[in-house]
Length: 303
Image (tube, rainbow, N blue to C red):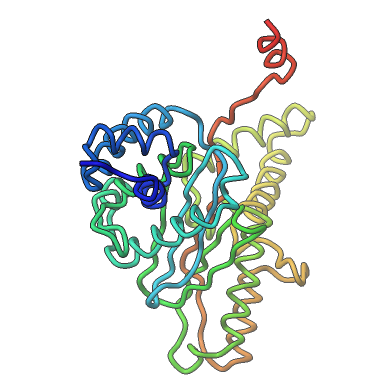
C-alpha cells in the first residue's frame, strides 16, 4: 500500500516521532497507519527502556483537590526544561486524576490503572511520554486524603507540593477562614519542612538516640550528671519545636505555636479544627543527581 507525505505528517502528529522514523514505519508497514503506530510503539518501547536508566531528578509536584479528595503527585523528568512543557504538565495533572478516580494502594497499582481519556494504562502512557518528549519520565509517588478538609499548596511552580488534612466541625466547614488557615499551615510546612506532625509521632528510637547525643554533648561540656539531665530535657524541647509541626512557632506570629494558633482560629470561628495529617513532596528529594563535568565533556568532543 502506497503512502504520501501527508500520511507521514499525520503519523508524526499522532505519535510525536521524527519524520524519518515515521517514513520508515510506514514503509515497513506497507502504508498501514495502525501497523505503523504499532511499529513505532515497539521501537519506542525499546527507546523508553533505554532512557529509563537515566537519572530523573527534576520534574513537577502537583497538589490539589479533585472530587473532594486531596491529591499530591510527584513526576520526575531529567531536566527542568521538560517540566515547563505543557504536554508534561498535563501528564502530571492526568496522573493525579487517575489517582483520584482509582484510589490505588501504591505506585505499582497506579501503573495498572487506566489513564484518563485513553485505553492505555498509566504505565503505558508513561512510556508514550518518554517516547514523545524524549526524556526519562517517572511517576515517583503520590498521596491521597479521602476524608476531612484538605487544603493544597504548590510552591515555586511545582518545586514543592503540600497537603494539609484537617478535621473541621460541620458548622464552620465551608468558612473561608478555615481554608486560609490551611494555606498558612501548608506554606509553613513548605518552608520549615517538619519531620513529624506532633510529639507523639516521633519514633521512640529516634528520640532515645537524640537524648544520647545531647547527654554526650552536655557531659563533654563538663556538666555534672544531674545538670546534664536537665539540659537534655530542655534541648529535647527544642528538638520538638524544630521538627514537629504543631510545636513549631507559627511563621506569621512566632509568639505562638502552630497548635495554639489553630486553637485560636477555631475558637474565633466558634467551632473545632484539628490538623490530623500532612504531606510534603519536594521534587527530586532524596534522588542523587547527575553531576556533569563540562570541561571533560568538551575535551572528549574535541578528540
